[in-house]
Image (cartoon, rainbow, N blue to C red; front, side):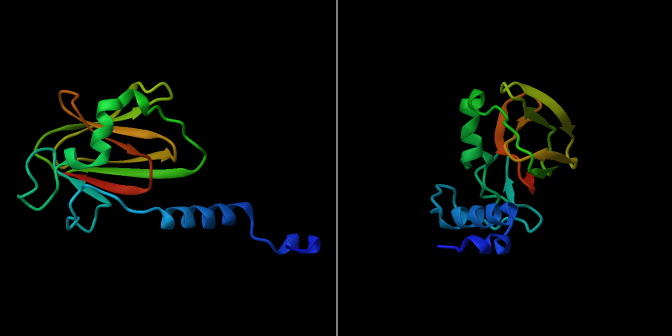
Amino acid sequence: MIPLDSWQRLPSKAIWFGLLTSLAVAQQPVHSDVPVQAVPADYAIACAIHGSGDIDQVIPCAKFSEAQRCQHEADFPSNPTTLPAVLTVVNRSSEPIRFYWLDRSGTRALYASLPPGGHVSQQSHIGAHWLLSTRDDQCIAIFNAATMTIGIF
């Protein structure tokens, strides 16, 4: 028990939140059906729109859980918090991709069309959801807003 006069020495709420979040993340078991890949150093996530993953050793996006979300797009409306994030998407593929925010009702709102070689760094907030699609609007994956870079090959 902490003495009542010691409360002033306790860390702030933000520090406690960071500590508790770190502990919760660190204690979550990692279960994945996605094979381990050598992700290019510039990307937190890298995946290929097409292919088996044999070429360039980049795993197809369809094998990631974020791609499985496409089957349930309506279940991912954004509910942004005040915690900021910057989500960067780099299109290393040979075809254009589209970058949508899923609004609070789960409706797509186009934020960018990325040509091959294009990229976007989008200011966002934790709790927001972002959808990547092909030019013909076939969902590639739905990502949680986070400060990270995603490479699409």
